[in-house]
Length: 362
Image (cartoon, rainbow, N blue to C red; front, side):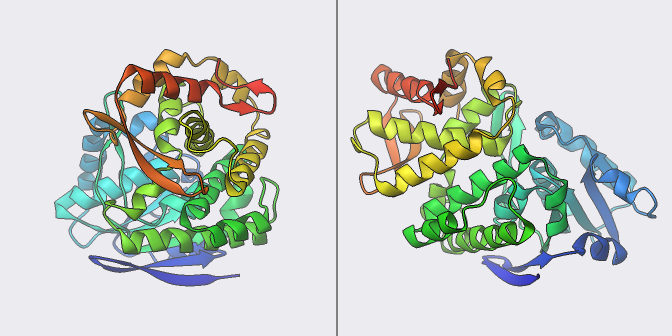
């Protein structure tokens, strides 16, 4: 159960390895490396003679203010221009490692070993870093891919149901954005939080192969790759408004539903196209399995959602920019004027996000 493929970028190729026992193999081959990892992984390294930067993998540590301390720690551990960073963890670790590796001494080699399903199906390729500044999420960053990515499938067994759901929601978003055939293949697999490792392996391959197409055709986010922002503009507002108590992938799932509701309200369709209905049903079924989601969302005030939505970096001074499905059920980028009428529609789209018969946002 192993695979290998390469991703082509303007700066060259990088490799993606998928299999078992890749964690141990990477640590055994450790000349001139420094590990950046989260506190979940750190105990697994305690008996190894390694240089380690341990990070609390919370959103608050992914801030520009925190980057200085990580860079200083690299220097104090003796990092030079020939050092390779090995980043082990989820999305927060990846964002920090991408950014720090790209600026330290004008750029270090680095490898990434994702420990979350979301990292495995989505963020591990593409090379983006996203760093928060003040109250603004993901306001700065760059594109600096790792040299190699090692996806150890055994980490999936360490994840709880919500973490698996978060990854599946990002995976289905990619497949839905890519093509009808890819989305059909995903739905035929029908993955859920309790699926076995072989099913997750299939999902990872399908999602990464789909995302590779976006990266290789539009590396720097000017056209096709923008479709992968589907669910994110609404989702980022949900994340911020709840103080990041709702995980990113879960918030993106809710954001996809909100975007569908906006498409209805804005008369892109009266009856949802078949593929949109399939997506909506699947997303709701996954969200229904997430414990305590209603309690987290019940604490969100809608005015805070709109404040966060207004501040999203994808908008312009005069227009909101969102990704929504069209009458055929395929995604497109929509620019809508910033005015009170459209604010009311966006507000209502948030309010219409349901799970079953229960309103999630009050």
